[in-house]
Image (cartoon, rainbow, N blue to C red; front, side, top):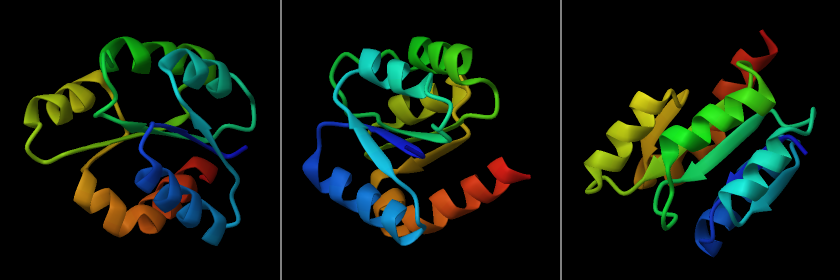
Amino acid sequence: MDVVLLSRDLMLLARVEGAARKLGLTMVNANSANDCIELAGNQAAKAIVIDLRLPALEIGNLVSQLREVGGEKLLIIACGPHVQEANLTAAREAGCDVVATRGQFERDAETILNRCLAAYKA
């Protein structure tokens, strides 16, 4: 798998899966932070997409653990509603590589994934 999505939102799942497929990537969905961390430890995982609306999400702790198991090269993308500025700021401060509003990500998912993965290969 190339991309791991941490979300319980079926609309976001469909959007990320479609974008990944267009880029020739495989995607796996994780329903919990623990599942996401386990999947990130898989050497094939290149990018993690985190839905910041996930209940009880501790983004700082999650990013730290993802970096530990996936290495610094693992791309971490976070998205959340534009009205939840504190969550977006927390994701930036936690060290996510890309932080986008939900609208931006849904509109530009393919472009964001493609740009990130191009940087991953560099």
